[in-house]
Structures are given as C-alpha cells and as structure tokens.
Image (cartoon, rainbow, N blue to C red; front, top):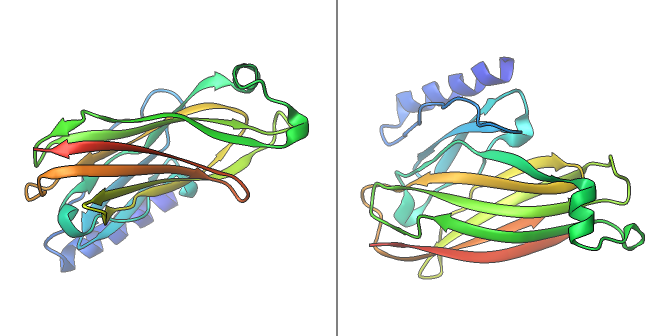
Length: 203
C-alpha cells in the first residue's frame, strides 16, 4: 500500500511540471494472476505506479519519437498451464537444465488508427529442474518504426514452472505516424533468452 501511494505521489508531482504527461485511470485487477501497473508516458519517459505491492510487476521503459504522448496501460499476466502440463508439452528433460521459450506472440488488432488502443500479447513456457524453483525473468517489448526505436516497455517478474500469457496495452497518440511498427518481444533470465517478432500497422 505504501508503494502504491508513493508511486502516485511521484506521478502527481511530475504532472505539476509537465503538461504532456498522460496518466491512465487504474482499472480493476484482471482475473487470474494479474499484476498491475498504471503507466503514463511523458517526453519519452514512463512512470509506473505499483499496484498490489509487487514492485517487480511495474512496467518501466518509455515511448519516444513517433509515440511520444501515447500511454502504456495496465500490465497483466495469467498462468495458462501448470508446470507438469508444460513439461509434458515440451518433452522437458530436467537433466538439461532450465527452459525458457516463447510459444507465441501477437498484436491485437493488427491494424489501428492514431488514438486507438492495441494489446501486445505473449505466451511463454518456463521450466526448471526443481518444480517449485522460481526463475527471475524480464519481459521486453521493443517497438520500432522504420528501424527506429519508438518504445521499449519492460517488466520484471518471478515465475515457477508453467505456461504464462502476458499483455501490455498501448494507446497510440493522436499524432502517431502511419506505417508498419515492428514489435520485438523478448523473455530473458540470467542465462536464457528467447525472442519473437510481430507487427502492427497504423493507417
């Protein structure tokens, strides 16, 4: 609770000195193992308000260039499969060490207009030799337009074995440039990483 009020105090203080900041309203907790962070974008910076007391679930990073003035919304994640079910799907051998693998990623919808909201989704598998062992993971999403970085939200989480689906909403600014935006999604632990590429078009 203390983290929550501290984060909102930082946001309110920033708003007093920056007229371009946009802080979204905080929605109710998403069903499942949801971890939320209300995030505003201002001059390329993102301010995260920790909801639920888990500082590692705060979205960090920013929106720069053609996406300045947009808003990164409420991050959430759900566990889709248990560790044993995930191990069975991937024919996992604990003797080979931990596994970290992106199963799929998408941007919904794939075609949007300036001012619209889209969701950057990713589903990935986490497996460790110890069934209850936790793996520290960083989820990264780099957004590029004409090979220029225009956004890089990321979140740090702890995961035990299982399959997880996560989503980061993005509301485009009214001034968003038209074109094909490439989203490079990465999951990374201390020793492992996996990357997948998706895209959306602003018309």
